[in-house]
Length: 306
Image: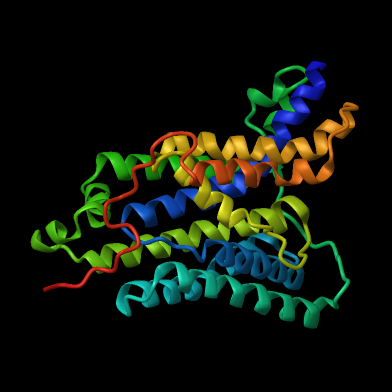
């Protein structure tokens, strides 16, 4: 395989991994705080739709990105209210919100664009770091990505610092591992969890906008195609550790890129097998085949004082 083809594959893997990286970062904070935000898929889809509509209506993808984030905030607040305040089952409420988001965006899409429309919309620009883009052969192909990817790297680095080096990060860890100890310290367990879920919603919105106005420059029904579930699987695959989670996202992105790369190099593999490969890897992760998984001690459990 030539260097040019290898560069194309790596660039594609990064592009497919980016929404997973963004969504999983927010979800990891939520899970570390004790809330299993299963509505991540619905949040990403809502963000993708609102971002696309905002960009289409205004002609400005930055406004679309802002509207995408604003549209997801009520969804995140709903998830937080149901799972934290009402102490409802977090898996059931999350899946319910996902179904609601799929139905709502499909209906709104057909009303605005028609059932078979694939209208192109203004999209976010690509950018490459000055030194990296000048590398012969691979510079432009690998490093010229939608600028949201690089913004995401900054957010991920800031999140890692916050979770490991600050008192807030310690409190978030404790909210999922030992919420009663947090409560006795005088901090609000539910307040920390609300904040974590809202952050998860913001990151999910950015991930959804990356898909619609960053990568594809249009919106199609159900276009997230399970990316939210893959992001959750990446957290399990990475054993709730940020570095390993990022590697899992890149692995899933590479598996997705193989769907388009192998046929171009003449390797004949059933398309159905390539499509299912990321989900097969996710299934192995959830099943614990890759090793013992250690989740936060009170993940998915609502906290009640007393």
